[in-house]
Image (cartoon, rainbow, N blue to C red):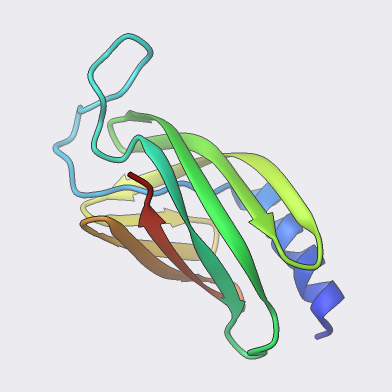
Length: 126
């Protein structure tokens, strides 16, 4: 797969599956406008890299806007050979966020995981 095709695949995957993240939080916790901040709410930034092609990589950021029970809402931004910005929705189970074929594990201020053919590493921005 060429770098251009991988970049296109990342955009399509993001559009079709959405992205979000989470940490282990009791069921029923939420963040809404005017409410107290949920531990996940905020900006997470880092990078993505091709699992099979080391020369394919780019910046990846995730802004968590709201958490409602197991549902996480936000926006992702992926850059590399192309750029995309997509509204996202994910599911939080314990300290694992899943969406589509992607799974992220949350450990304090870090998230690590994999998507189809790429790895993701994120750190909470302070």
